[in-house]
Length: 114
Image 1 (cartoon, rainbow, N blue to C red):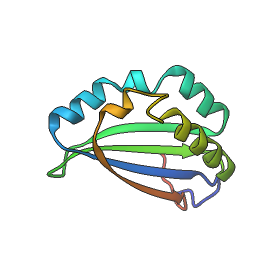
Image 2: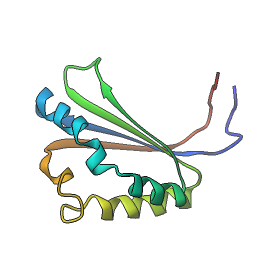
Image 3: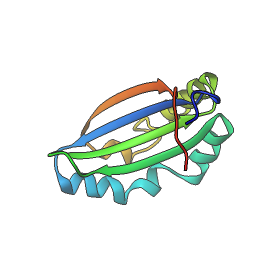
């Protein structure tokens, strides 16, 4: 087990939707919101990995996103980029959805990799 040898900054985001249909529509719209151009910009500023998953073990319509950043400054740069990218005038698709969001930020202190 690796204990913090390479500090990685993480953000785990939960999005709760009103219905299964809303969640499914959100998943079908991912390519419109998370474009190659956006990922290139994020990657150049410190994003290492972004995972989007459908949470199935809760009685909710939930999506989880995990962001991994190479440094605190990378996280801060990407946070600004995402804030701008997901303004309704810059990303009309994202503005179509109603959801409750919960954000958790942390630093990796222990990791197992197979």
